[in-house]
Image 1 (cartoon, rainbow, N blue to C red):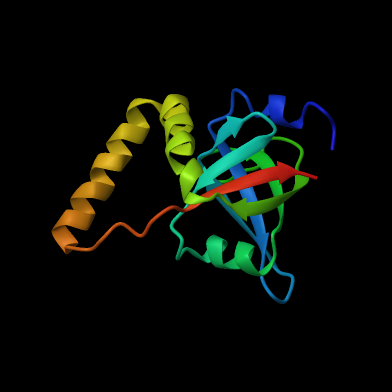
Image 2 (cartoon, rainbow, N blue to C red):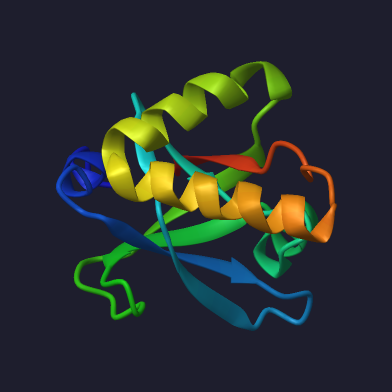
Length: 132
């Protein structure tokens, strides 16, 4: 991986996170992210398909992309792992700093949906992605 892979993502709003099914089929998803030193932090529902695939195979590919998932730069290999609950607050703060009003709005919508459905918070779904 070139040393500037993470600096290339500094001004990006989305990355294409490619995970792999059991049979090796690649599945790409555009996601919000925040940079934390040498890691990329991504939030996802712990029950989402990409989370399940990462539990089976932590090897992923990352590339800058548009909101619709059109890749706009070079992809690089990385390894993904779920963050411990003790790091979730920091990760959430970094995401809020990167997305500002949009993140606060999304958090409010998620809260309203959980309240209307009377469901509980599914917990920490932050993933730390470390370039290979």
